[in-house]
Image (cartoon, rainbow, N blue to C red; front, side):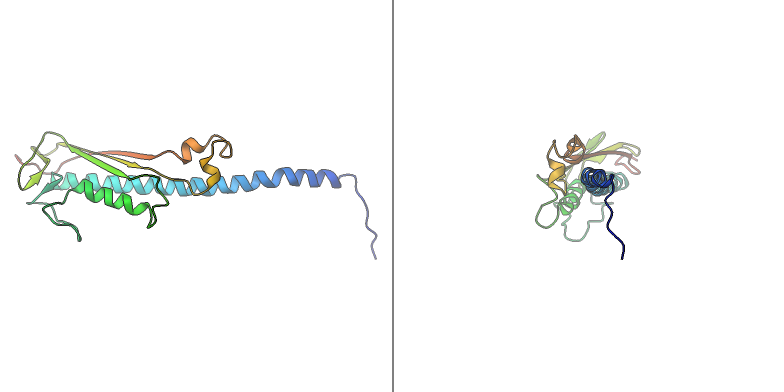
Length: 175
C-alpha cells in the first residue's frame, strides 16, 4: 500500500487551478457569444443583400410588371423593404428574446418616381438601390450585457447590428 506524500507544490497547484478555471470558463462563454453574434450579423447582412437584390432586379420597391409577390403578401400593399423587415423580425424569435426593439429595413431607389402600379420605380437601368438594416441584437449571456463582466466587449456584443448594401437596377421605367 502506498503512503500518501505531501508535496510542497500542492498548494500552488490548487491556487493556480482556482485562478485559471474562471479564465477558461470566461473564454469559452466569450467564444460562444462571439459565434452567435457573428451568425446574427451574417443573417442580417444576407437579408439586406437579398432585399437589395430583389429591388435591383425588379427596378422598384414594387412594380406590377416585374415583381413576383411572395406568399402571404398582397400586391396592393407589398414593398420589398417590408418583406426584408419581416425577415429581420423572424430573427427576433417567437418571443422576441433576441431583440430589444423592432428591427427596421429602409430602402431607397435613386432617381425614382412613384405611381399607381409601382413604388419607387427606377427611371433608368443602372440606377442605384441602397438598403439599410438595423437589428437591435440582444446577447445570449447576461454577462455579455454588463460592461464590467464583458471586459469591455459589451460594445461589440450588445450593440445593434447595422448593414448597408448597394446594388444597381437591371431594369428601369425608361429603359
